Length: 517
Image (tube, rainbow, N blue to C red; front, side):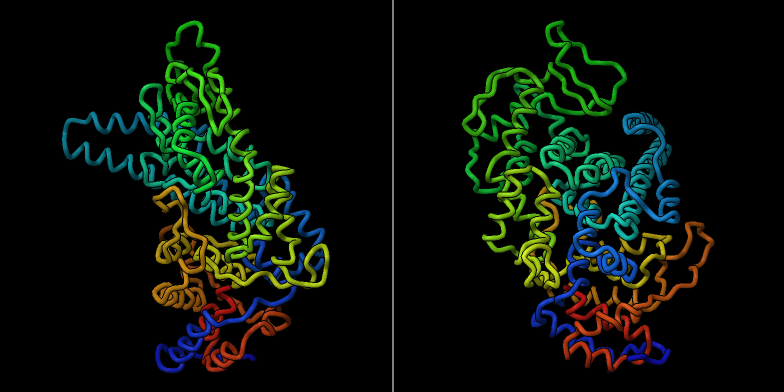
C-alpha cells in the first residue's frame, strides 16, 4: 500500500487505529519464521543493509562472523569521526587525577559564590564525560556492523551494572564499557568477570574501595555471588559472602602517583594498573573457606582463585545461561534450554559458544533444520525500551549515521531505561511485564510519532546554530514490501489502511504489536 503525503491528523482516525494496535500487543501471535526474525533477534534491529548482508553470507557464515568479530570495534567513517571527536584525552588515571584536583581546588575556594561556580564547573566536566559515553555507546549500537557484540555489550553492562550518578562515575562509565565490557562481550566469562572486578567503576559503585581488613564492606562480595555469578538461592551462605569480602580486602582504587608505604615483606604483593590497586596493607591475610574450599591467605592470588571457583560453579553456568537466553529472546527460557546452554557454558566457559548454542536451539528458532535455524521462528518476546528505540531508528534510517544522539537518550529516559541510569546493581529488568504496561505503551506511541514524522533533531549537527539536515524515515522500503508486510496481522493491516500520510503510517507501524516484539 502506498499513501499520499498529507499532514498527520491528531484526531479520530489515528487515535482509533492506535487503540486497535494497543489492544493487539498482548494478543499478537508468533514472530515471522524467516531470516528477518533471526537477524532481528541477534542485533539491535533489522535494517535493509543488514538483511542483505545476511542473505549474501548465509546464516552460518553471518553468525560465525558475528560471534568472532575483529578485535578492534568497527564503525562507518561518519560514525567513527564522531566517536574520535569525543574521545577523552590522556589515560583514565590522568583524567581522574585531574578531576580530583579540580574538586579539591573548588572546595578550597573561600568565597561562597566563587566556590559555587567552581563546583558547578566540576560537575559540568563530569556531565560532559557522561554525555560522551552515552553518545559513543549509542553510535556503536546503531551503526556498528558487529551488531551481536554491541547487543551483548549492553546485555553484559546491564548484568554488571554501575550507576553513573554515584561519586565520579560519570567520568569513568565510558571507559568501563569500552575497556572492560566490550572487549570481553564474546570471550571467556572468567575474563569478563576479572575485567569488571579490576575496573574502578565497579569498585567504586559497589564500595569495595572501602573494604579493608578489620573494616569489611560486603557489598561487592554479595553482588558478585548474587548477580554476577551464582544467583540467588544457589547454595552459598552468609559465611561465604563474608569469606569473599575478606578475600577482596585491599582491592580498590589509587589515583596517587606515589605508591603506598608498605613493610618490606609486603612490597612484592602491591599491584597497580592504571587506577586499579591491590594494597596489601589493607588486605586480610588470614586463611578463608569459600564454598567449602580452603583458600590460603596470600594476597591477590586469593582473588584469582575465588574468581576461578565462582566461574566454574554449575550454578553460575545456569544463572548466566538463563540470563543470556532471556535477554536475547525477550522472554523466560524453558528449563530444558537453560540446561543445554549451561552444559556448553560449563564445558567451554566461552560466551560465544553459549550464544551459538542458543542461536542453533530449536526453542530459539523453531524449524526443521537440525543445525542453524533455517527457516525459523525466534521465541516471541517483547522489546525493552533500548531495543525498541534502536530498532526503530535502524529500520528507519539504515546506514545513515545519526548526528545527534541527544533525542535518543531523551526517549530512553522517558521510557525508563536511560543509559547508565539504573541506580540498583540488578540492572534493568528483562521480563516483558516490566515494559508492556499501558503507561509505557502511551509513551511509545508518542516516541513513534516523533521518529515517524521527521528527523526529530537526530540530524542536527553539534553546532548550536545548526538546523536539522533534511531527513525522513523510510519505513515503507523494499524490505517492508518484500518481507515485513507479510508478517503483519489483520488488526495491524486494518490500522495501517487508515493512515492518511506517510508520517501517520510510520507512527502506526512503529506502534504495532509486531514491531514491539
